Amino acid sequence: MVAKILLVLFYVLSPALILHLSHRYRFINRLGAVVVAYVVGIVVGNVGLVPEGSRLLQEFLTTLTIPLAIPLLLFSTNIRQWFSLAATTALSMVAGLVSMLVMVVLGFFIFSGHGMTDLWKIGGMLVGVYSGGTPNLAALKIMLQIPDDIYLLTHTYDMILSGVYFLFLISIGQRFFRLFLPPFHFASTQGLLQQRDLDGENPYTELLSKTNRWPLLRALGLSVLIFAVSGGISLLVPANSQMVVVILLITTLGIGASLLPAVNNTPRTFELGMYFILIFSVVVASLVDVTTLGGKTPTLFAYLALVIFGSLALHIFLARLLRIDADTVIVTSTALICSPPFVPVVAGALRNREIVVSGLTVGIVGYAVGNYLGYLVAVLLRSF
Image 1 (tube, rainbow, N blue to C red):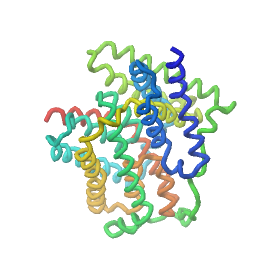
Image 2: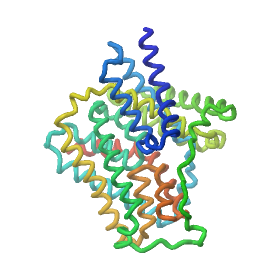
Image 3: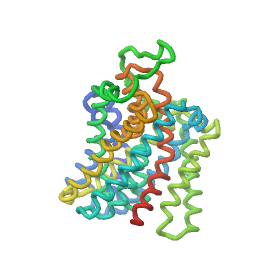
Image 4: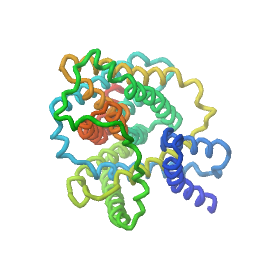
């Protein structure tokens, strides 16, 4: 019993150490907290540090953390801002989503029967992560009952390929996109960014501040209530559909709660949600036996590469037809493929302040719709 209590404390507290080290050491920050969380989890799970008989406890934690994280991530959503997106940005977002969906479906038919079972589940998970981000990937893993090793491989390959894509965007991306698309038209000269660091803050340090402590506890309590209500309602449906209903209800209620000013204005709810995502990452990585990962890699890697770079090519083609400028396409693609936190960094590389808000808004919309869209596509692919 003592060993299991210590294991739970490790899972809960290790993300705090990871975030502290990420803020203190630049090379760890460049790796990213989620990557470090996976490494820590894999090491702990494969060197004999996890006590015997802990599997049920680990699975309980993976099932608990995502439903608590989703509402917290959505509480700060500004739905009204969704409708204020400029027409050009909205067109680019739709073009990006359509491009991604086409490549997910195309890849499903190309790679079916090449060593990967239940490829429809992978397709649904990819739709979630490339419309939203890691929280959607984790939610769909639970909804679709994807094995831990496949989930970890998918996310690992996603981080590798997305990292390559991100480096392309901030280096020669703008010059490449302008070969096919018109330049961005600034509303004013103030839109031009001077080169400066846009990523120097560590918002997680404020989670335990006296100012934020009680508001965040209330937000966490509301997240627990949403989880409980969703879980209660899910008992009305067949057992094999209960987790799907829980996640979709939690997403819907989280968006609904964001309409309440008292909830929407609570500081640092997004960061608290991401902390739960880090706990999930450590736990799920510790469940993986690295000796079982062989033989599954080529098809999965090729599928992700096709979705990322194939959707980029199709997005550019559609943007050219719609006469969308290069910077808008870049920031929209960044929000969808790489997730919203990368938007300010790309805006800095492009020296364009005016695209930051629209890029972040596209990313938040993706977080909100990713669970619905990913599950819908998975169900459709399963029917083939």
